[in-house]
Image 1 (cartoon, rainbow, N blue to C red):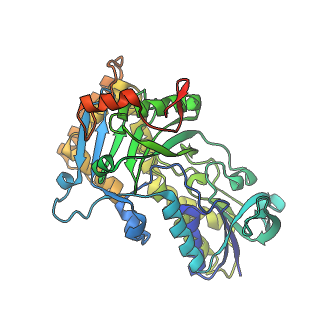
Image 2 (cartoon, one colour):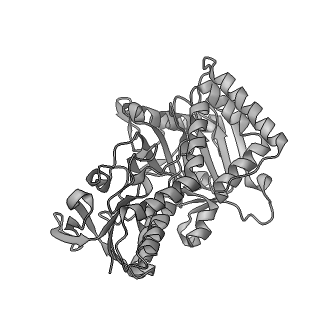
Image 3 (spheres, helix red, strand yellow):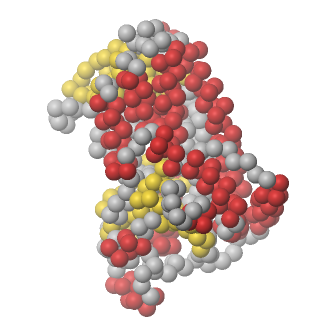
Length: 448
């Protein structure tokens, strides 16, 4: 019987393990931090809820309102009540805490028969020409000891679902990729402010919050996730950019208290090699995060499932060991299905995030109802949306306008957006005493 090791217990690894376990294939899932919370906005598209049979219990908030905030603090509201229907309210963006969602998906795979190992793989012997069998050396932490117990396991095939710093990718010489840094603070707010964020998420753009991405305020169960991202070349600026998103949103976050600080690398494009021998990469390890939106959860889960489905098919339900050529069929299917999506979003990021003038035009563009519908149809349902000739013409003109503005020298000063629940006089008095408590250091003193 085929033996498979899935290294990494996030959405990609859990979905792969679930498919393999259902097929009766002997499967091990290695995850060192079972309570780990990846620094992530935690937004999932509606189609993921049904496609991956996710219960409502893991969804903290059903967001139906998005607010885009430009470099000059112009606000554009996007309401799914207007884009779709105010009556049925079936469309929404799910906001999740990764530690909750990941644990559910991982435990489901274990319930189906996958062997969940609380362990860290420290060495991979890949055999002759990386063709296996593969000998894993790992530290087993199941007994709760700090050092872990050294163990070994031999398997026929490996799925690398171990994130941007993938050990599997190094073992298979998958090649490097450019990456971004995500930085996030979880900020607990008083109930008044949390009520405001009940079904609202905010996205901020501007060179003060990110030179090549965006900042966000996403609601969770009892707090908001406030973060930003930037490319590797700008990683030394990441805390300054976090200060930027804090400043832009500080009147909305007054009286907040940081309860967790997180940072993590996020891949910017697929690795040069994603299958070598009988080793395959999925999720962040493979580089499946989109530009422009930074979305990765759905694509992680989908890639894990597609890879495992190919293994089940090629192994005839675990009766034979798939070859490298067998595993590469998964890559061809993946690239055919999603290659265009990645290319288009990379182009959009290049166009709209190049300057503050372009970002202003981008936010203005988001005020158009056709743009909103096309965007959310594509995001929520992961489908290619057909446009009529008028929509195509309008979208082209709006894009040309954004490009033209992007060539201009950025102008404008920044000021924090108004409080959502208090008048400015009241907020300014509060800010004179203190602002967000805890978290990163701002200037020479901590915000406390």
